[in-house]
Image 1 (cartoon, rainbow, N blue to C red):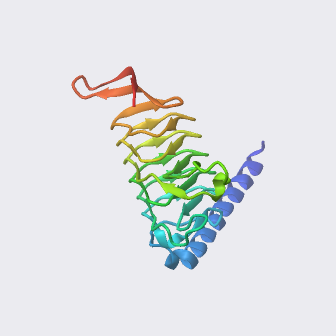
Image 2 (spheres, rainbow, N blue to C red):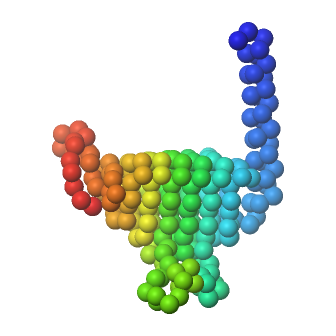
Image 3 (cartoon, rainbow, N blue to C red):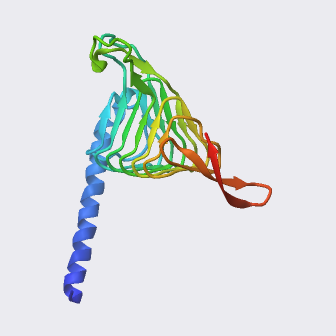
Length: 211
């Protein structure tokens, strides 16, 4: 690649980024009033359902094709839920994530959520075998709290009433439906603790513990 071609690519990349930032600013200005609170610039390709129940803090980045869904209705009951979906400041949420709540989902400051993560506090009832599951009542199992500084790996699934501890790591593709302590690494289906910080020694130690 010649020097001139390299410079042209850098200039093109810079212009593209400026246009993307302008697009975000204009879009955010047009939708901010609909949110409970919106202090970051929002990409137009992030899907939002019921923004009046959603708050997003400062300097938080939501990558395109993520869906934030604050659930208010189930199949038969309009206004059945009063959800609260809160994302703190300095968070990063990757592409193709699905974050939904009918109770409460709180993502605390500086959390890093990688691509294709599912976070949901709700499940459909299934006890009536004569009715399709999709037509049965929605059950709220929340709240879910993702602790400050935590890291949720690609493809992880966090379901039900769960608290992820501060500065903890959820491994790629892990399934979590129980609380994770502070300063732990969990992995697997179902997730288990595989590393834990030992304050006495100041070291991270390999372990194998059930949640």
